[in-house]
Amino acid sequence: MLESTFSVKSVMDSIVPITRFNRGEATKIFDEVHASGTKIVLKNNVPSCVLVEPGRYEAMVEALEDYALFFEAEKRLASHDGEMLSHDMLCAKLSITPEDLEDIEVEIE
Image 1 (cartoon, helix red, strand yellow):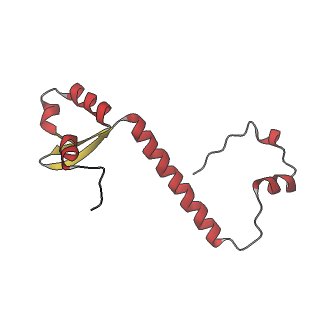
Image 2 (cartoon, helix red, strand yellow):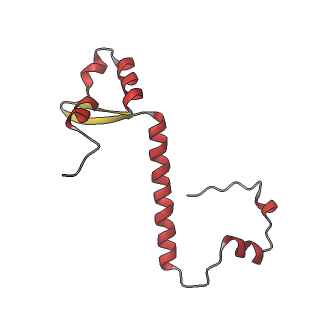
C-alpha cells in the first residue's frame, strides 16, 4: 500500500468551519495556519477557501511561474527549426559583454 503524506486526521485537522470566524476566532485560526501551513475553510459544508501561510504561498506562486517558463521554453524548442546558440555564443556574436548586461532589468511575461 502506498504511503500518503495526508492522513484522515491531518485532513480533519486542516478543516475550519466558517462559524469559527463568525465567533471571533480569526486570530486563533491564523495562529493555527502559521503552525500547520494551511487550513481549509468550509461554508455550508463546502470548501470555500484555503488559508495558506505566506511563505508557502510565495513558494507555490514561484513554482507555478517556473512551470510556466518551462512550458514556454519547451514550446519554443519544439517549434524551433534553425541554428541554436548558447547564451555565451550569442553574446560573442553580438559583441555583448557581461558588463553591458549588469544594470539591465528583464521582465518576463
